[in-house]
Image (tube, rainbow, N blue to C red; front, side):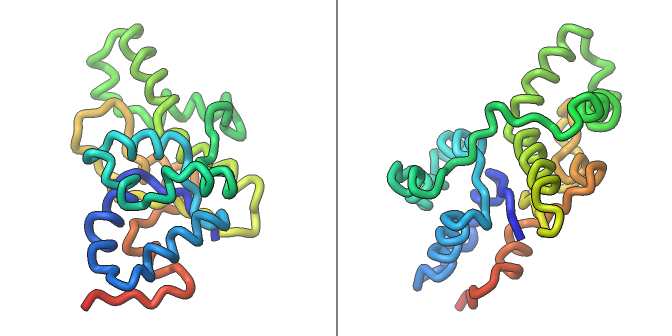
Length: 191
């Protein structure tokens, strides 16, 4: 199993689970899984974590900001030059399936191109591209994208939420609670 994790899930982890992890069992397990590559944290997620909720994720998961830890474990995963396995097909999906038609129709062509460019460089797309690449390169492994988002759009954005896009691409999504249950060797209970 290889897991790619979203900012929202890391935020939920540090807000709702780690405060009850008095023996640091969960903290150490997450750190270990990140170190051995079972949980991947991409560069765009670290960027988001630095400014989301006053940086609580990198303040709590201190190893994410530790240069020695990052260098030793080749973190965060660089997505700057990551391309979809089938670029033309992926771009057609963006324009025809990932976009929310009602929202797109409110924009001029120039505005849409600008929004699309921002979207293509967003953490959401980089998470999806990382997952697609992992699926292609590891056909015998389970690839999971962990996010707290739901499929249903409720924020008037031009593009669909991560789970809706993943559903179209055959990428399995779970939330942080489901991930914790799936992790081997964690006997974590809230008392």
